[in-house]
Amino acid sequence: AHALLMQSLPSGIRFTVTTPDKGTACAAAGPIQVAHELFMPVAGTVHGLGNTNYMTDVNLFNNSSIGANADVLMQFFPAGGSTAAAQGITWSTITPRGMGTYRDISTSSFAGVGALRVISAGSVFANARIYNNLSATGGGTFGQFVPGLPRTLALTEGTLLGLPNVLSGSSAFTGSGNARTNIGFFNPGETATTLALELRD
Image 1: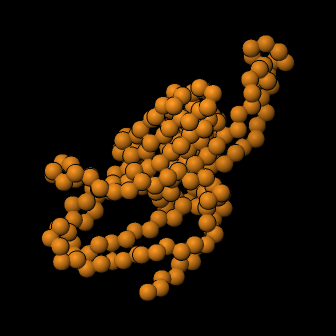
Image 2: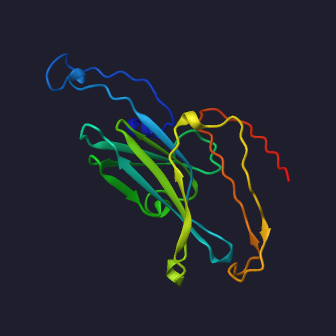
Image 3: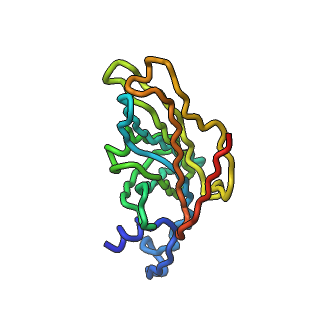
């Protein structure tokens, strides 16, 4: 229970482990590994207007330069959550220069829409593919990739360009006459923050 609680916390904690001072059980027998973290601000499965069927695949790549496995912890923080603890946790091990893929991660591993935090002591690349899956009706898929971002790239201010709600005469938008823009925000910190938005035309 304590281990699961520690895994769910969004940032580092401090604890003490007492081990023998020599032999294979000694904590100092291996090198200390620093954990690296990446964030994917949005992931989920959503059925929307016009029979859209949005899904998220997550790809992980072990870029180890010494031929070591990468143990990867992935945490899920649901949208609208008021707690700093993750609501879902999954572990995976990726072989050197290997790749792991979570197809439709909100169905296979986590439920709902939210943000992902990827933690590993290894050198890991991660991205999310968010796409509209119309394969069941012969429409194929289309979408975009969202890279895993380090905490250092979190913004205190910024500008988003091109946020249209465009009226379309195309029959491709079945059941809807608009192209819409959705925006998601994720706070990787442990304290609440206030967000101010200004829309200019």
